[in-house]
Image (tube, rainbow, N blue to C red; front, side, top):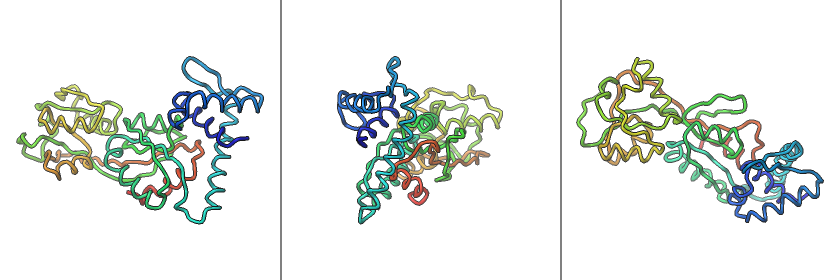
Length: 294
């Protein structure tokens, strides 16, 4: 059985698409199809059902997927055992990250990891915290880094960094602090989308303060954290964001940070992985060393 064919097979499974798998591993779609057809011919079974635009695993395909992950992991372990130095370890780690980790944590973690393993490459996908969790559950990424827990028996969380949220305004806006949460209701407010970890914490605090979210003077909901900060810098509105992100911009004198009375809720950023997904050797090493990489 060809290990490369098994590798291609696992990518089709994870993406549920021949074309997306081909794009991920830099092969043509026809080459990917040929590998899968060769596997099916050799095994004498159908591995995928083509339903609408997705390629869905058959029962035989599901069984082969689990064996393929184990065989590919054994290959990595064998190569590592035969190598003279750990620095020769190769592979790709697929990471889904929410806004703040993607901008302020992942670059540092990747840099630190590649000091020891310079041949490892990364594929980073930035999404909201909820979508990060969904990608980890679905197996399309190896790990996620996010600011909100979404409970599932399949997910394991490792706390990486603790922080709080702060109010940010433009340099042009005069606001004496610390401010009361009700004081911000009069100002135009820029808000993250509902799937973000930041928004989840803010909504809990508003509920605790007996303020309906509709009382905020929201002028824009924004998907991307960097775009939101630009709205604040340009004095379009104020916002409540991660202290980690705010500190970087305040240090460059691009915006102002204000404390909110009673808003002391802290949160963690977590690394999350799927316990049912067989990780590659490089992914396992990243998970095991994640806390030290921050």
